[in-house]
Length: 263
Image 1 (tube, rainbow, N blue to C red):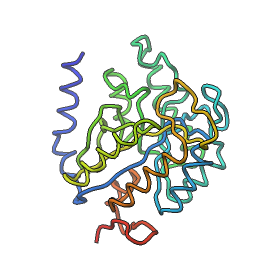
Image 2: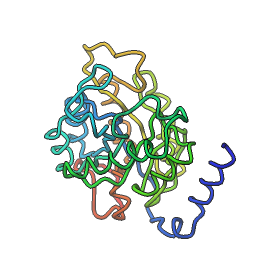
Image 3: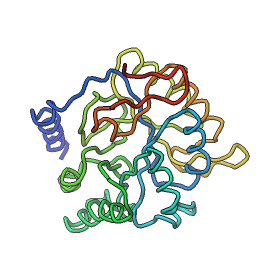
Image 4: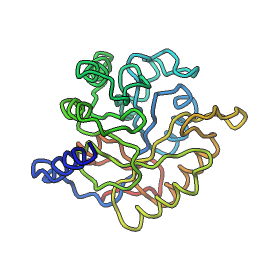
């Protein structure tokens, strides 16, 4: 299986049809948020809007307006507010089944979770081009095949920096959490120095007075998140959505003075 996935990755990444779509942007960061927790809308969105930053929310399509693991998920109105302010809405399966990576799913079940999620979000009015693998899992051939049918980008949990491109089904990322600020700063310094596309994965962002839910992957307090944003701003690195790259970045510039731009 590992050899198969390696060959799939190599054939996908090295395909002339894919590589010829690379664009000339030296250094960018994308801030992504899995599960579409309401805490993102309440705590991350205002801080990012203040800095002229926009993010990518990977929503569990069948849980919009509901709960996941006891935590409230954004409703349709909240997602549309983000979307109308330049955020991107991506897919994180239809129901976030923990067993999706167990190898017990049929092809039909893979398709239902991956493609129906996109269809549901599109019915809600979102243009969906990106996908986040459950737990970053991306080594099942049926999953890769279904993702390739429907999406331009898919984010994994493999750690690293990506080439700036307009399509990639194996995007690497780094996880941000309360105790990982220094680690992520290291990756920001690295992308600033060497160039490329750094994708940062976040989950819930809660007020400092609220205990972090545990053991849940990738949650942080608002103060720690604001420090992350301040560091990105200090380094003058452009923050983009995935769609920005599809559209060749365009004329987007951070709203606040001192931000990186592509002029």
